[in-house]
Image 1 (cartoon, rainbow, N blue to C red):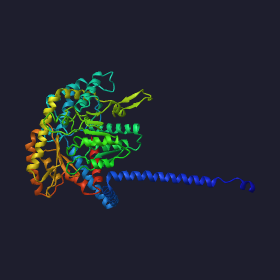
Image 2 (cartoon, one colour):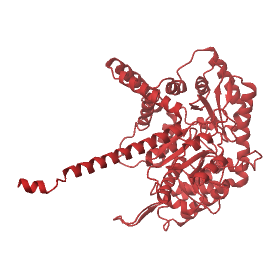
Image 3 (spheres, one colour):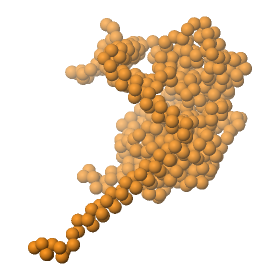
Image 4 (cartoon, one colour):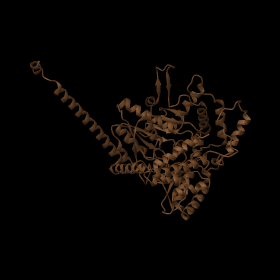
Length: 544
């Protein structure tokens, strides 16, 4: 036996050697891929920004550990508890006059009772009609009482309609197709394609999903990334989180507030599926260099989404209304998708937007199709299955009611008011500065005076009935002018001057803007605490 064993060579050393070689190759592969990812991340973020991110993360973790100590934890819980009570005090009505309906009535109520109870609920809040005074930034895009009646009549006619069943509701199918077609012509792509959605966020989500699937099918990208300016709408970050995409948020030019093309190009790599531009962005109302972004998209064979949700029915009518404009639509080479909210300056009912693509072939990547479901073949154009056809009918009616002339006049009035606010602040309010050079309906201002906290000014404006938007990075306040607020420019400026004088004369208060947004910028752990407060806010929305 010993002789036999010596004659048969052992295979164990060879197997061990092969295993070691394989393990080495796997290690080298992982090392190389992780090194490549780190290199791409550093190119996108820059060494200084990456180092700052690491430092802030380290400090944040240290602070969060310290907050777990019993004494600190109790203090945090006490302060968060007070924040919850404050939020509930503002949103949830209380008192003997409040009736809560948390279970079905035994017998159905009469129409008269229902209308009266709605009136009672409106009376529980002093803010029900505040939007009618024209002091709300954006939020309510009211086209007038006559248009409202047209929309309500359309609702009544198509209350039970559902575009999921085009054979049952052929008129709704036709109206939806025509809404998309009208928007495509507005944005100079009559041969393009699109769908309606429930709003700007869904339009952006659909575009992100479409670009991801397009890049996977045509370029084999399995670890998708996208590059967006920091001023891009947060829905792009939401889409990245939903669809498993790495997002690079690139700081904008601090003076022009436009996308930094040099840094965006540096962030583009082999996994990039799309870049993003805004016309106009939500925070400060500025327009990115869409032509420059289009060149990058063409050079690297990637998508370019132009977010016109807020620009909607303002941007396409700027030139007709007599204002200068820079290219932003499908006439720009490289643009693959545009989102447009019909329910903003199109004055359509809330819950309607349009996502447009340069071609029908591109739109196919948005669809969801399942052919082997037990319930039959299932196909839907967007996230929702069933959708309210009444909203589509209301949108179609609003667009026909307004027409090109109506939208042009609306654009002229709104943009003139916005430019008047910006010009007056520049000329008469030295404590403030305008962020960039906004071309449309939004103007944002920050403070350049050491004694003026612009968030404090925003809180003081709220005491005068103004509902404005607080911004961060940098701290600022903006107003999105609407048809309701356009006539109130003089009142806005007068109140703004008064609030600045008041802010100078007293120490910083504890209004909503100062407390929430100031916390987010003043401490490394601030965003975590703000997130907890935001979660409380969402919880409170569902407290019956």
